[in-house]
Image (cartoon, rainbow, N blue to C red; front, side, top):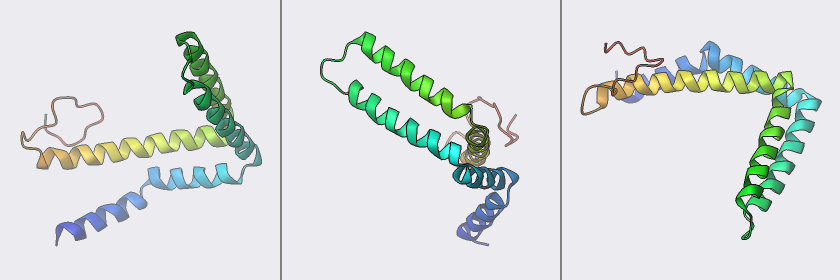
Length: 127
């Protein structure tokens, strides 16, 4: 079996993983939820406005902090919606799976033959 064939097999396994399926299901639920869509639209508009304010030549450090605080407030509004919160958690869990996969692959192809010792979430079995 070639490396590309193994990569295809891994891709299929990832697409069939509970993390990927949960992420796609949560994405569809979030897209279908009118309240989620309204909140996302408001968030994107606020983000655009805040970025524009932050890129002003004469913005002060205090104003930048206020912009950061407003941005955090807008992000918190998103998290109050259950469909968005589930989607964000599902994406995070899938990203963690991908990080574990990448770490396992890197273990076998890195010149040092190790991951550097940070084994948080690692399942490659080096220690």
